[in-house]
Length: 269
Image (tube, rainbow, N blue to C red):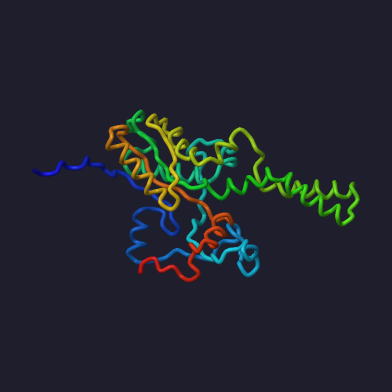
């Protein structure tokens, strides 16, 4: 007796954003040509003068190169997202929304037209949201910094009035790079909201959730989407992953556990 055929799942649309490859076709050609997109880490992503192991020791990393997106800008007007919401949210939210839109267009569902909205769901793989939301949390750590600096100034004999003046200026400098917390701040820093952005924009009723399988998060998202399709819970699934994390938490942590290459990565060997 022949074994029953597994339920068929059709992949009808693809999209991606990688360093030097903004489309699936470009990524395929890059793989065929065995090209790598590693470049020296941009200073605005990680200042190696601060975090090199020779300088920072256990608080540093030996990573010096990475494959990063260049010149990417989210077109908030295209998606009708208020500027304040964009500022308050990690860019991973908007990168996922943009790539999902391109995948839908590639599948013939441009602007969501023709989608069975009530039975279309979204599964996104992501770990720790992104570096921008983690950096923004520093604004809320100002009281700890103030107490630490104030204690040192007092130990150095600074007069109380001079301390207050100095700390007021330092507070302004400390908080300036980060958005003022508002109604969008919490949702903008959560990983599970990434899938929700896509559901909300296209008014999808099949459910949206994010999954965290570390380096396998994207694969886990696709596996869960396939399971939902096979079970009949969804008719269409938007599945993939997004990661924008090149901050000290990950790069120092991976360096300490030995998970970062000290020499060239020969990914095509």
